[in-house]
Image (cartoon, rainbow, N blue to C red; front, side):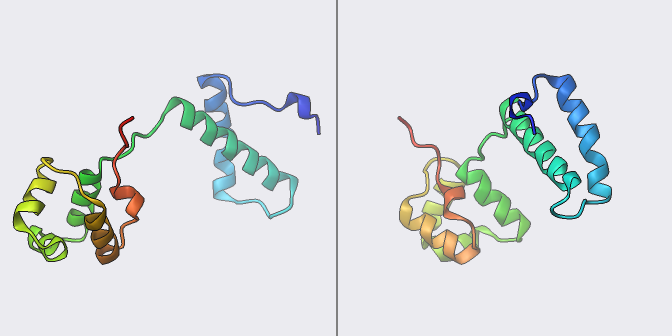
Length: 125
C-alpha cells in the first residue's frame, strides 16, 4: 500500500466518481476481510468526509425536533402538558417564546425516548 497516494476527494468530479464506484457494493456487499471490503469501506469514508465538508446538514432546533416527534407519534399538546405540567409553558415552548429548561428536557427525553442531546439548542458564546 502506498500511503503517500492516499488523499481525500478534491472536487465534485471525484465525488461523483466515488459515488459511481461505491454503488455496486450496495447491490452485493463484499465479504469481510477481502480487498473489496476494504475498498468499499475506504470509499464510504471518503464520500462521508466530502459530504460533511461540502453538504453539511444543519442541526435541527430543539422545538422542531419536539414537533417532529409529536407529529410522527400522534402526540398532542395535551400529551406534552402531562409531561411538563403546564399548559402555558407548553404553548410558550411550541410557539418559540421559550426554550426548554434542563428539567423539561429530562422529562421529555424519558417519556418519549428522545435523546436529550436532540433537545438541547446551540450554546451561545
